[in-house]
Length: 324
Image (cartoon, rainbow, N blue to C red):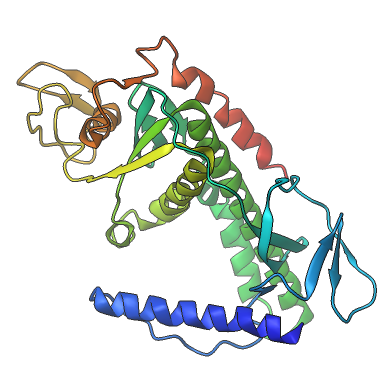
């Protein structure tokens, strides 16, 4: 068992150096990997699923008596091949994640397509008029985070009171992370279920997180949402297309004319063709038009179904998760 744990540690080190060289080649701030003590990490794992086996609801380790009972969040696929696992310590306890290999289904040949424009006021606006609300989990918890941070500052270094204050602070952060992850999973799952082709922007998040609204961009977590769309689309056989985001908010989706707007201008008014609509809806339609997915495809509005009606339940689902 120890050699398998060492492989996971070496893989983490290899990933750190690969990221360092990738940033160096791109001309960014490299950030050379630094040594971290044992208290820095909250995870350990098995890079290869050997020395450990899953026996029904229990995990058994080679060379150790007894077993570890596991409560599954959802059942593993019957055809899944477990390749690795990782244990993670959170403020609420320990959890284990399994990396499995499943067969990839063929791409859908359906005709339901949609363009998605990601934003801050509304998390995503769809080209057929639907939208996904933004929960702003970190912003809603900001007052409590500041209060707990001040409580930590008032304690003495190394005291038990400081340890308790840090645990309270960590529980708030963990609750924010759960709310955000729940919302992203729900939103991505709904899009994958309702559409056959999804078109999103290929955003340069490195530049967006260096702007004046970096905190809101981090809170929205667009990168994680697109990552979820990628693996869920591959698993479900849905086609995900990423297009150039340049000038999607400035172009008119009807005539293609350039209509300059400030960030505070929320309505698109085209002087050439007279089109007037929400700025984000115009951008979502431009995103869909740039994909070039073919003239035979149509969106949900043309099929007589409104995505906004199906996605309207997301605010209630997101607010219910905040109590967990």
